[in-house]
Amino acid sequence: MEVFVFDWITYLLGFALLILFLQAAIYIFREYERGVLFTLGRFTRVSGPGFVLIIPFVQQFVRTDLRMFVEDVPSQDVISRDNVSVQVNAVIYFRIVDPQRAIINVADFRAAVSQLAQTTLRSVLGKHELDEMLAERDKLNADIQEILDRQTDAWGIKVANVEIKHVDIDESMVRAIAKQAEAERLRRARVINAEGEYQAAAKLVDAAKLLATQPNSMQLRYFNALSDIATDKTSTVVFPLPVDLLPKGKTQEG
Image 1 (cartoon, rainbow, N blue to C red):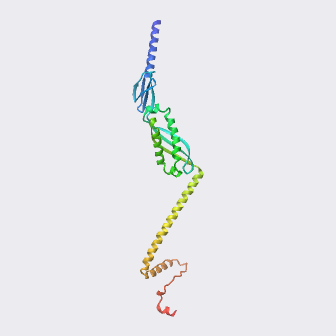
Image 2 (cartoon, rainbow, N blue to C red):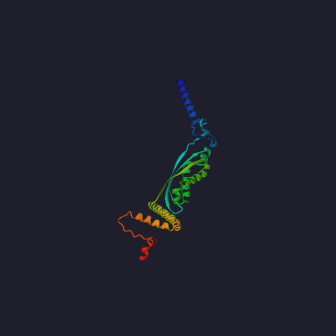
């Protein structure tokens, strides 16, 4: 009886060890996952997706995710080239393209990308004026993305996109920008008014030249002006009458 019980315990222990062995030896990677395999601490290969079998305790896998990561860059205090203090935050989209370099060349690639993005954001925006930060965000996004992508290439990281979300300005600077915009609109209004006066003066010169070719046409303009004024019966009109229009007899008596 004791031998029978001992055999059952042995079988159970052997079955448990087999389960533990298989659990440590079998890896299943999803479609978006890859495994970086190390054999006795040395890099062997990148495996996945699907079913992978390894030698437990001799080989070890480190999982990586190939999906897009979204990293929020905290607000950074930036002094623009025209000495304006602003707070800027952004968001970065990146993914792993080389699992081997992402695991071997950097300890924590997400933290590394985040810190690099913060310093790059301050460095790039500090070279531009405030107006450029507000009006040329697409260009700034492209510049930051290009710098980050070039520097993270050694880590097996591809920076797909960078978007500046907010540019926070001090309240006093907001009022100054509003005054500047108002002054710009006033300048445009004055320029448009001056151009209108210039065009009107040019047309008057042309009209005067045309009227000078026919002296009698000036009398017709007098009559037209008198007709326009006569519609208002509450005013007294003093209209100059050319001497040429008076009868010759009355002019002689005068």
